[in-house]
Length: 99
Image (cartoon, rainbow, N blue to C red; front, side, top):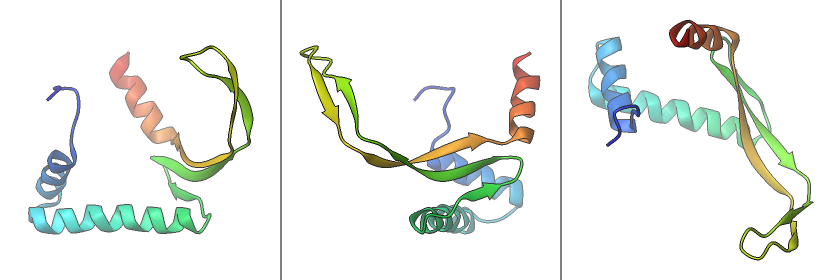
């Protein structure tokens, strides 16, 4: 495992320690949070965690691209995805660490 990554299990453990709760409670909390975000995105709602960031659904139009194997032009169909934009507080906190 790379040392500059944190996986779901480590996130659950850190959350449990920070809040002084059990790992089971921490896992339920994290799972519920992700479910709430997912449910609202499915409804087309934007999820704004002030200071942290904004999750939203984006629709990509059909466009032309290039097949990397053949180099030939190809049509890339329209799609739906999730975009995330970093919040001001998080952005500033990271800038302080990097400088």
